[in-house]
Length: 358
Image (cartoon, rainbow, N blue to C red; front, side, top):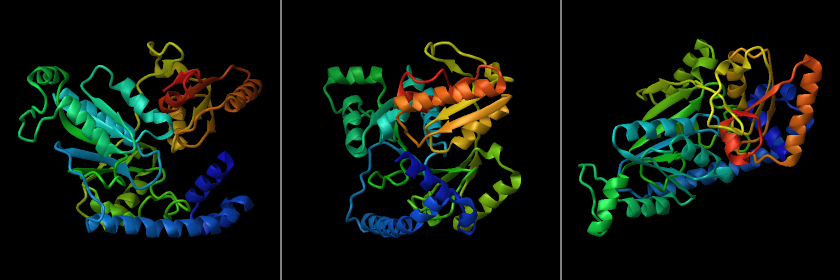
């Protein structure tokens, strides 16, 4: 299965004009089937959109403002870090946010958010039915209306407790662009500058969850990893976006690591200089590993190797054996003991695998 996932990802990254030279015979053999499924997927998303448009499927409006953070393509767009950033900003301003996340792949991103936002007023609801999850949290903690008035839906005794816990003032949908059942007040769309649209095809032939025309629904667009591409690429990307929605506000972000956390004592912090002139093996199960690898390279590592797995990958014993084998090969080749750097997201889902996390 991992082999097929890798093949599909490589197909999605290869422009149609370069398929013959860039893809293997096995990958090329998958294209006819992927094309059929992609066409069926296109029909399905159009039908679903129309069902919501004509109120045949219901949109639910929450009693608090809703901000959706999503994307048009599969992972690696910086959605979860943006959700964390927004939640912390609201919490710092005295507004208690509720993050609603689906919890893919063992809820790795939810676990990471819980760890990063521990000790704040942020609340995190995990589950596929985000309307039901939101209703449960709003009933449990109460909420503040847009006019700033707390809603006292419980007894006076319980209401006093709610004041101490901070009533919910805003909801943030993590990966919410395609979650149409929840009405949103602001739609933020994240775009990966390193691979914005791939081969421009819909899933599973390409990386697109929706056609580019879906950007018309966006209120804000954020180009992530803008520091890892050339200015000409940014200009071309911005031009493509403007053709869809000329007035769309566009912002730019980059990944800026602060420190390493040594495993297993993650209460300590290591300087980013820990990888200076070191041989590093990057281990990840994220949507787009290239940005992770380039970031480590920019920190001054002497050599960076990598083992990449599919997004939300749950590491098994055979994967750990593969890591050990690769480490032995690197030590033999470079004459120094390498270190492993694993993304925090990958560590969250896999538990006690890895030496360092980012």
